[in-house]
Length: 113
Image 1 (cartoon, one colour):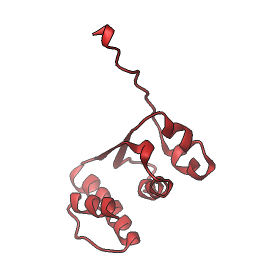
Image 2 (cartoon, one colour):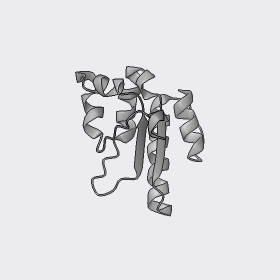
Image 3 (tube, helix red, strand yellow):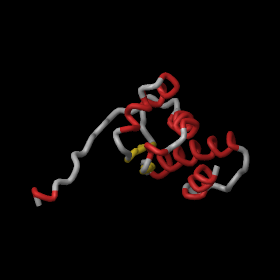
Image 4 (cartoon, one colour):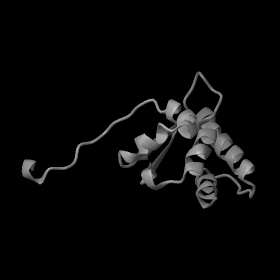
């Protein structure tokens, strides 16, 4: 819940307390930034391979803007390859289907520098 509250505050919204209200505030705040000011919200989450399944399922709700003509929100996940395996599970299929770009970086090799 602290993550969602922080997100709401970061968007400049007045904080509410129920989870459903926080999700609505996040979506409305992102839409407002996009439509009124032309700002695309970018959220970078790292260490996502350590995240709980419920958090991944909640992210699906945040990404559900019901807007086919615009993308007001970009979510970047930085994680170990283990997350890809988790996202292939049936319970995370809706989230996995919303990922439009995947990039895997190679390990840094000290001999190459």
